[in-house]
Image (cartoon, rainbow, N blue to C red):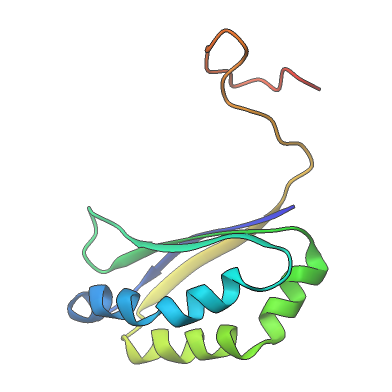
Length: 113
């Protein structure tokens, strides 16, 4: 799995409407093969920031996404919203397990491996 996570800063006056208007691009990404999650949300503490979270099955799925029109159109859309900065990273995931163990205790260690 691949996690995409980070933030984008926009003109604060355009941020909220920009997120609303991005719905078709987000919906298109969610319909792509290998996309498990794709969400962009407003930061309630920073008025010009949105948070990005995506979850992809593999590199092929992510490469397909990057080559498609919705990805490119989203970039143009964000530019029109006055992008002023961003920091977005990708992470390759080699192990997944629940945060809570069978007793309901949150665990920082990986206990099922």
